[in-house]
Image (tube, rainbow, N blue to C red; front, side, top):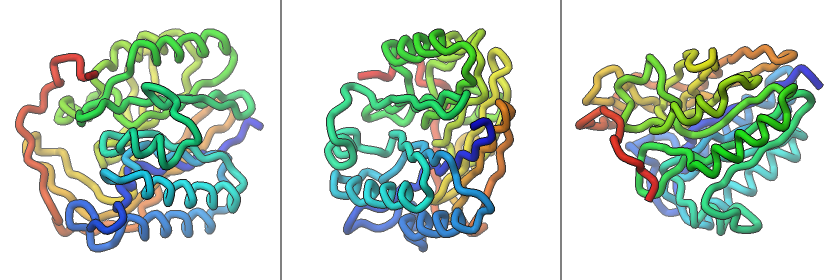
Length: 280
């Protein structure tokens, strides 16, 4: 199994029961997720893996994560594929652990899987009460150990918060705060790419030891971060297809919906890095 199709769905921000969609969206995010699934049915292939890269429920309860779990279960059965989910800054760890998982995994939710000659790592960059992300030392040690044990496997990483890159200068306050520590772990290993979300716009860049970084857009809404201090929000929906062919990687964005009308705006103060260890 060398030729793989991976679907990345990022930042769906699904609406908790009894609440209204975030940022004045007119179309409920659950409907947008349903539209993505319908679009997946029209693809000329069945995915090998689907990854939700964080911000699953917009500040939801355990019941909301149970509802998501039912959707994921249906996707697994219909497409005959693996499905993995990651935590984002808007997810509630306790509610996710209670409503989605069979058991509490501990301080962070990270795992890996192997498909053919490819190893997929699903990392937990969420920090309670913070928008910015951080990978704990123990998690980096876990990652480094498995990379060393599988030097011939092509490694692909998924996490919510993007690593620092040249297109994210206005987002330093929100992205992964210890990018150098992760790049140090990856140095010298067979890494096919790092795939993230969080910032609600698509971008890609190469950093570190020529590591490809791809940031996916949101399944719910776009954020225009070109102005450092004013980030207008537009209702939209997209997902992306990651094609892996004998270790080579290509990414296709599927834009299903985009409305140019500004529905909300984020006002940003300092765009600098948090400047301190965010783990509480």
